Picture 1 (tube, rainbow, N blue to C red):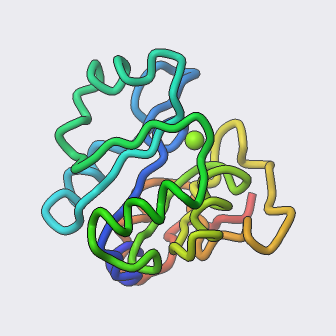
Picture 2 (cartoon, rainbow, N blue to C red):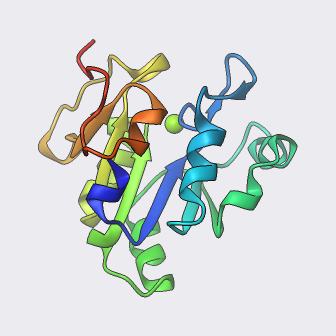
Length: 158
Ligand SMILES: [Mg+2]
């Protein structure tokens, strides 16, 4: 799916996209996906501040996958426009993957980025309420990011 979307930068939300705070470990399939994407795309970790998340990221040993880590109090289109500038690309060449349509997906859409909603966990039922919260693609398993067809192998309808 990611390859079909041809991004120049892939931005992953941290909490509930890479990391499961309820289980206290990485989400199933996350490390495999990061390993496979590492040689192909520069990646950025996009994370809210607080809850000792910085230390958690170190503990998990996932820093090595990311060119940059961005910590913010609230996700905003500005963060993504800044990244576009920093990487010298257009916002439309950034792909943002996250579990919340009303947070990172909305910020990404407003900035003009491509988006994939990882619809699982606590916010799986939090549906888009407006146009700018509607993701380009929806997945329910991280491994679908690697699918060559551009479609999720599993149905995104819950
Ligand atoms: Mg999240």
